[in-house]
Length: 156
Image (cartoon, rainbow, N blue to C red; front, side):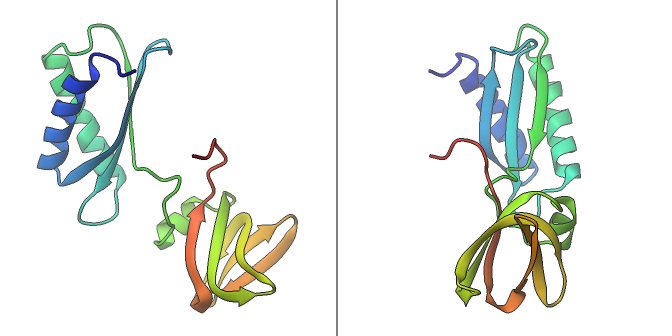
């Protein structure tokens, strides 16, 4: 069941997102927390979602929600990019998520696998390097089709 404030919050958030060339990916208002948490995931429609995108959106959304007194009590606002479940593509992402659990998929079998689960170590010109249960594996980049953060939360 949706919180009754969600439609108003969504309308304001979508308008701000549109002005900033962003998309609302997910919006959750967790009233069971103290203070309540409004969490919104955004995506930049023209490229990588940056920290600057999150900051601009957060500032404008907070100003609008407060000016219109949409949320009557104190609340926490958390703005981020979707991250989990997304493919890693940029050098920055590979550096930022070093040590995180990932799934690496290949278009052909490599060492009897087409899917690898392990902790991301690095990426260079030749390979994606992951730690699989204590063993370092270098998977050739030319056969890698996807590197994705592994979501350890409940799966759909």
